[in-house]
Structure formats: structure tokens, C-alpha cells
Image 1: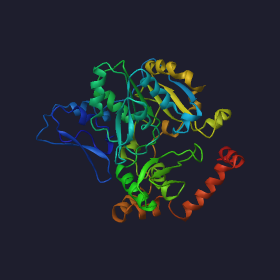
Image 2: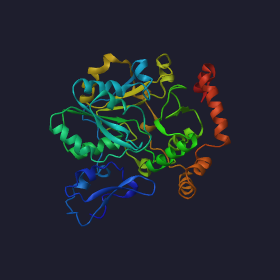
Image 3: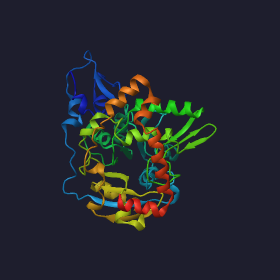
Image 4: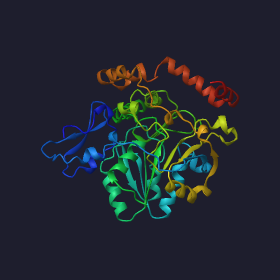
Length: 389
């Protein structure tokens, strides 16, 4: 096997790495920090298993004869304060914790690298809360999940749509004790750029980083508000601190395959899809508040059954499909016109210079940030802005 699929199409899900019976495949970072399979020809037996689980060659069908259902959902204020949107992940994972199950999702390791982890207690689950706009390293997580399922354990697996499909293709059969949850995904950011960003913000603050939050709600739910906790202080709302989220939101540092990803649609491979419910103010203004609202899509009978178990802990509104539409459920993001130029700056001149050119860390970004804060902190102006934008 020379190559499993074209590099431009590879999702980096790691299913091929996990299923290879001879250990011939390693996941190796390229010059942008994204992982791709590399085949050791001396170990490869040409069995074809890697290609059989590569999602480039598979469609992602909805469960036959199942009609998707759509909801706007909110957990308690206390839970939503520590969640990216409406706290739906906490409600779903609580059910598994209460039934001695396991939860898999993206969290930080000791060096703030984003990895997929397996946890079985509340503290571990809490470490998986919140958005991480970086592609997580899957390592051998599919193998671990398979072992747990074969042992009869309940497992909740959460991830991007391509990570969920990677798991399903790796398992090659349906497990009654597995529930999969994917995200309304904008794409995945570069781990290499994120690592440079973390080094930069520690140098900028002159202190050691203790925690980083991609979605701080100090200024409310909307927007990419961030915060960084250091040993001796907490920093929020600084323009330099927002630079990574800006690069991500503009699709400047996202994986190339995100621009052609088949998962930007309602056709899901998961039992449940969750995300921010952007547009709630248009259809249900009385349901919106500053702590966030989740969009819930139920894709399978298994997902419907789980939701019945947890819905009493939530405030909900059933909505129509046309009221659920998000950009990431309709079309892939276009490749940024400045993507190549950013990477040239980043490679040759470093993160600081690159964000001053393309990361909104400049006078234009400073003015935009002031105007944005005026809109956020003035309810009347904020309402007018959302009405006429």
C-alpha cells in the first residue's frame, strides 16, 4: 500500500492507524502540524484493512426510515456558565456517569496538547467541557473504545463528525452500548499554530499558563471570547489573546480537507448532533439569554431513546428543520484567500509577525474590538445589530 487516500482528502481521523494489524501505519505531523498516515513498507502486508475503514471511500447515511428531530435546549444557569453554549454535553454525559459508563472527548494533556481522552468520573468529564478549536490527537482511542464495548461497558463518544465516522468504520458493527455525539463543526485548527500561540501568550503575560478557555462567557455567549488563567492572574479580552480564535474563525489555519468535507450537511453518522444554536434570537427571542442555547439534532432511534432519559433536566423547545440551519450544516467553508500568505509568514517570521498581518492584531482589529464591545454591552444596540445585519 503506497497511500491510503490523497493527502488533500485525508481527515486525519486515525481509523487506519488503529486498525492496522501489523503496526505498519504511524500518524505523522506535516509542516502545518496536522497528522497524516505514513506507511512502513517493510511491515505492510497489503491486507487493505486501512483502506476499508477510510471514510474518503464511504458515505455517511442517516438511519433508514428515521426522521431527524430538532430542539433548542438549555441546561441550568450554573452548568451553562462553564459550557460553550447550552450545557447539553453535561446532561448527556451525566447519564453515562450515573450508569457507570465511560465518556470519550477532547481535552488537554499536561502540555496543553489537545487529545482525545477516556474518562469515567465527574472531574474527568469536566475537563472535556468546552470547545477546543484544534484537531485532537486520537492516538489509539478507537482500540480502547472497542475493548470497553466488547466488555459490555456503556460508552459515550463525542467528537467532530469525521472522528465519529472514523470510530464507526473502525468498529465495523453497531454496539447497543455505544452512543455517538458529533458537533456542528466549523473545521479543525492547526495543532502546530496552537502550540506557537500558547508559547506566545505565556511570553506576552510573563507568567506560566494554567488554563485556557476558548469560549469564556464573561462578555456573554456570542462571539469568540477567550480567557487565559496563569499562576498569578487571569487575562481576558486582550486582542492578542483572541488571535488564534480569529485565525480559526476565518478558516486561515484549518485542515485542508475541511474545505471539501462531506460532513457539512444534515446527513450525519452520529446518534446525536449538538452545537450552538445561532439564530435562536430570530425564531425564539424569548428563549435566548447571555448564557447560551444549544442546538440538538436527534439522528437515530438510539439518540431519541437517550434524550428521553435526560430531557427532564433541560429546558427545551422543539423546532423545525428550517429553523435549525447553520452555515456548517449547509456548506463547507471556503479556503481563505490569505491562507497561503499566513503560512508563509508563520514559517519564516513566526507567530507574532503572522498575527499582526493576518490575525487581526493590529489597529483595524483594535477598532473593531471596541465597536464590538459597544454592541455587546448595549442591549438596544445589540438588538438593532442582530435585526439589520
